Length: 328
Image: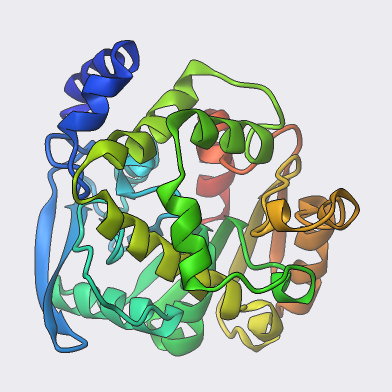
């Protein structure tokens, strides 16, 4: 496995951030994922695209496959420990980078919808011969996982939502920014700003060195000459998230569903665009988790006390135990 090489590269990156930012392109060229990356070539919206993915089969297969869907500020790399635990428990695992993220294509023009991403994901599963999967989505991946389960209930054996965003409709509180506005914000990003956002929203002000890689992978491409294209894709996906809520459709889910919620998460899109008083009413995950669980037929709610937006990064052993206990 390439994890040791990756950690060494990250160490070098943290010592010399400027050099590191020049070494990674917008498709994370030169960065090794925990498992070999494969490519799914397909055509969508009148253009040829490449979806990067990791696909590993358990040495002791139980006949089930888990599909892991990453969040907005992440890619398939952060599922490394989760993949290993699932493989050891008999599950095959597939981990795509969605179009616009990680090592996948960053098209100059693309109409992003959760339906389109779900369709792309289903095309990938069909291509690798997976007819049914347990779908686990984190953060934005939770919104995508929900949309996938709504579109393909017969192919979704179980739905697991790990600190998903989209448990509330931010349009009701946040003024519309538009793609150009999101794009301007992306162009102004810095490594320091990325870390501060994660510190405040994900980790309730408590930093650990184990979080550094997930800042690095966002900060390293900032100096790339192609970064504006990455920023444009990021802006398009922000608009997708903001304008396409799934919160009104949770009651329509027809698959077994588990909500796994870190209770100290405060993530909410657009908090920086509203007053402190309004921001304080957003991202209340303890309340949102209970509210959404009550609307999903026969849903189960698992609460992680003392954890924030990334339980699988902050306390992997606790997350692993809860995940394996709740897999069908």
